[in-house]
Length: 217
Image (cartoon, rainbow, N blue to C red; front, side, top):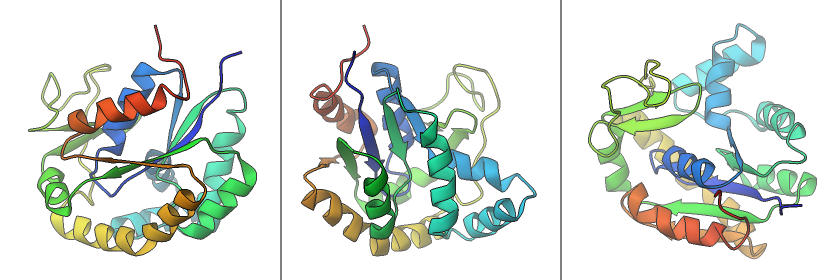
């Protein structure tokens, strides 16, 4: 039986987590669990949690641990016999400790991109919501403007994809994420990858993953 990989990808907003995750899924037999997409889908619901999620996301704020854990546990419960890549969680040390108490992680991928590069990236970013595929007018344009390459479905721009909102999200990230990285570094799980673009970062990520899981033929 092939070895299963339980991995997390971490990085600041607009750092290319969606793009790198898509490349990982394309190259390896692994399921991408994007909490950002799950939260955005939940925000369209008229449930109590859905309304809370929408209000927080519109302000560029983080979703509370109890709601996040409910969503994450539901997603991972159905992936017992599959490799998975978790994107967007954990965001706090408490979440990291709780997650590690429930699953045995193999690897934490940490994307490191300069803040000025992130601010340049935010303008012109487009998302295919159902899949999480990310495009950019300059760095990664779709083949047909405004349409997803694989499905032809319409791309959207997030309401919080602007410089003011990104500044707030980066401030929150800088406040919350260092203890998470420290926790995973102490656990000998953290691998950091530096670069300005996803194309620059990807070869090193792939080389690292090949130590844990076999690439697709």
